[in-house]
Image (cartoon, rainbow, N blue to C red; front, side, top):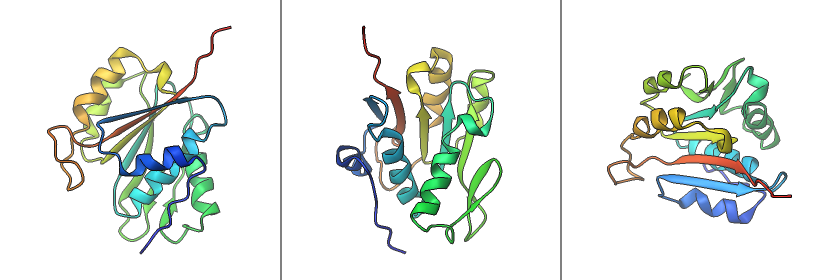
Length: 165
């Protein structure tokens, strides 16, 4: 199925073709970072790619990008492609996981079990601890036809611009 990638911010849309190991987006509130990455990763999911979505602190699903992805799936009419569960989003075709959502602060070492994912999305990356980044970095290394280097799958870090007063 062809999917027409819809992004709000055209600059972010260019990241869909990036082969960089880390993609760090910095901008103010409302700049389209999260919506743009959500749309890029939905397009990748339409190709069977899996994404683990992280935050340093996540007390509930409401603290994650879960609701944003659900809204984008509905807005773009993709309900026939994805099954929205209470704590993850699956592919309808085979029931496999498309998106999972986890906090890192309480147990960053648990991320080592996320070896079968194509992408990591870290929202609010400015709050990411050294311990979490240290655990995430070697875990994301799935081989794919898109990325040919030793560590080839990208990690999207979405950060808010911190303004000095």
